[in-house]
Length: 347
Image 1 (cartoon, rainbow, N blue to C red):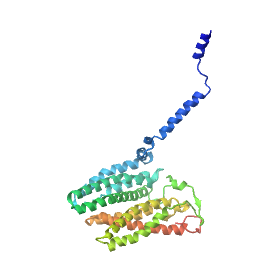
Image 2 (cartoon, rainbow, N blue to C red):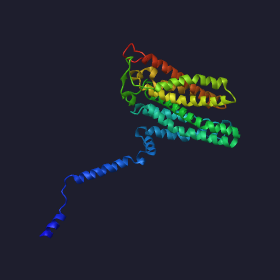
Image 3 (cartoon, rainbow, N blue to C red):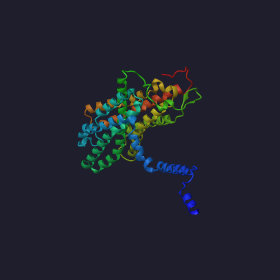
Image 4 (cartoon, one colour):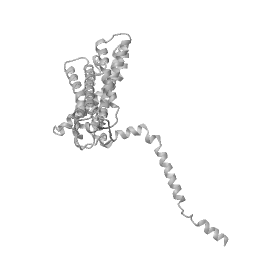
């Protein structure tokens, strides 16, 4: 009897009092937390992959990648030309065409045209970097050691500048493509989603509803630094001594500052509240104001047979960005630095 009772007890399943279920749930939570903290799942490689495979920007990425072989093919002849070995000469036709296509495609889609065109410009700039590296290699094979040293220093700077100019030109072309798709209708597409438009706002002492922003400080710093740096680089232009290093630092600050200023300006526009719809705050006008003169000067220098058209384009871009920055700061102070006379944004 005792043996049967023991056997029955051993064969009886344990009572389901919730302990087993709770234990299993804890195990699943632990495994999930380990999976979330796995460096492979949240590492830089995964973030880059997610950035590249964003479904909303898939077409923009594809157009930028398709532009790379055309940029390389149309600019390849400059790689083997020793007279143009300091940075090369990039064909802008594929860049402008890619930007126009993206602007036209995203004109009636939720994704902002600005975001899509920046993605296309970054992707297509890979072709620009290929040409820069090729010309640097040609320089190392054909030029004296002194020139090789200078080219080694300038190649990273010119490469990053080439990326910035490529993005700006792509955005300019996208503006034209969007304008063409909308049959000349001004202003942004109301169907596009912009995170800045729905961001929380605060009321300033002047009565404006804005966001707190420090991006304009970068724009202001660029406006102060550029004039003396340009004068020292173009007018003083020392040929030896410590002045050469000052010129190099000045060019570095102006080149990277110009690209950073355009990005800071676009970010600051998103914090203006109602004033962001004014004509003076339209980012398309600022991009056209900076990229338009640069493209015109580059094209003119290229067709005139100038030995190094990018040099003229660089200084034109720096000056154009400076004018855009100063104009924006003046308008920003005028329309948001004091109480407006009416409730509508000034334009």
